Length: 130
Image (cartoon, rainbow, N blue to C red; front, side, top):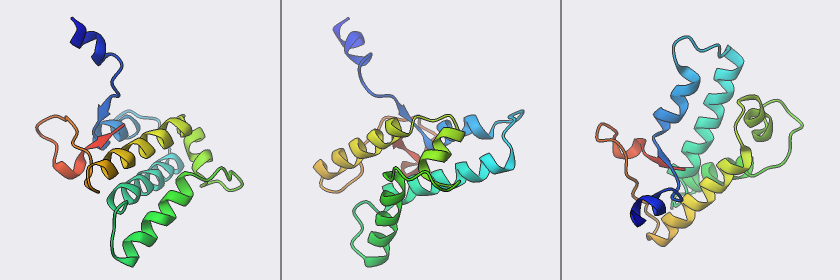
C-alpha cells in the first residue's frame, strides 16, 4: 500500500510521441501555424536534451541556443517560447522545470541521460522524462 501512495507523488514519464500526439491526432483542429509552433518547440527540446553534454563546439552552440530560447522571458515576437506555450496551452514554467530536473538527473548520472521507464515499443532515443 505504501508503494502505491508513494507513486502518486512521482513525476509522470511520457514519450515525446505520446505528448506530441495530442496535437497531431486525426480530427485535431490544429492549424498550420500551431503545427509549426509545435515543431519549433519540439526541436528546441530535442536540441536541449541531445546536446546537453556535448563536447564539440557545434553541439555546445546548439545547446546554448536552445537553452537561451527555452529559458527566455522575452515574448516580443510570435515564435518566442512564452508565446508558443501560451498558444499551445502549455505551462511554460512546468516544462522548464522538467527540463532542468532532467538535466540535473543526467548530470548526477555522469552526463548520461537518466533512465526512464517507458513502453517496450519505444526506442531509447524516443524517451523523455517530464
